[in-house]
Length: 408
Ligand SMILES: Cc1cc2nc3c(=O)[nH]c(=O)nc-3n(C[C@H](O)[C@H](O)[C@H](O)COP(=O)(O)OP(=O)(O)OC[C@H]3O[C@@H](n4cnc5c(N)ncnc54)[C@H](O)[C@@H]3O)c2cc1C
Image 1 (tube, rainbow, N blue to C red):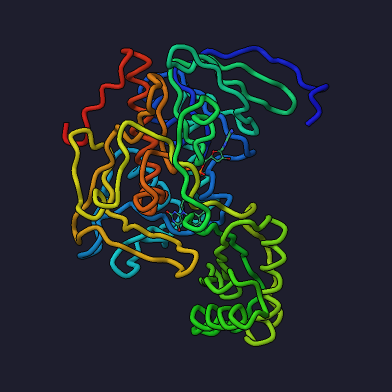
Image 2 (image 1 turned 180 degrees about the horizontal axis):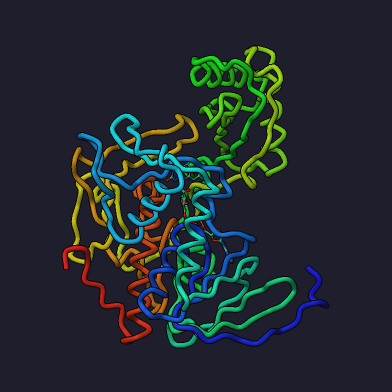
């Protein structure tokens, strides 16, 4: 970075500042603005949607009750349910789908981006600043007073009444000096890298089984890097398309991930005739982190809370998604919430220790390593963002979060 070209632009005052424009941040921003707060959303990428869009994901998890018949609606109502119905309007053919004991909603990243953009543009009190990175935080007496952002060489000071950290890895809270937990390297869940493949000819139905088998075999024999053994293949919208989803156990750069993806496809092309002329059309925008920092909140949700379907007096989000851990040695491991039941995420998991005007929402909330395996999925992050947005707007208007939980 060349600090010689940095200029200071006019500061902004706002009621609610949301840092990070992933699914949690966008719903937080829209909810705060819809409650009458002057909200500002800052996102360092040039687009909103976060991991869901940049990672080329295609199923929203954590929206529905597990077990039983196809659910009639989402577990959390409000804006999360609205996102689902807007996605349904854009792609009516993509309906809720059963995957074993759970249900997911298939989506296209571009559709999600369109829906999230429409949520933002409907809110006249919301300003969205993309390409804008949080670089510093100033605090006084347990309050965040100023957040400094950088956009295109220009620094800006933002003075909010309240801040919601939706940065995925808790970066804003860490800049403020909030303590956090992080799993030891050998425990941290595998990251992911997706390659969107085109040029598949006469696809075989068995490819979702054959591809992981061939790659696991090659990884075991040392012909391909060991992490390729957990690769998954899913078909795309058209017969000539598919997704190769790689799981990565740390320490691999975006460039290395791409090289490994090309090597894997080259290896497969020699063994599966349908892939002979296949090529990588697009990849996720780098290696995507499943697990990062967990900010210390007033309560830390545990594995027992999840598996015993615990409800809390300040429960604000319902979740029935299992603990899904992408274990470095075993691959994905699932532990289920009791069938037909859900647990609640208490508001205290979003309230940050020792800071009166800071909330966290999305992937970085206060949970254990195991509980994160359940709370980190998109449907849950959206619902958390929405609740944090309403609470922050209340704080800006009344000086207190005053969260009464789900049952009020
Ligand atoms: C490989 C992989 C596969 C997954 N598969 C699924 C799946 O199939 N279904 C599902 O539901 N979930 C899935 N997930 C989980 C899910 O995608 C994420 O946990 C969820 O989207 C997180 O949302 P978020 O809004 O909390 O954070 P993010 O989406 O990470 O958004 C955080 C945003 O903050 C921005 N940001 C960070 N720091 C700064 C800063 N300093 N200044 C400004 N902006 C900043 C980032 O650019 C980003 O846009 C998967 C995750 C991974 C990694």
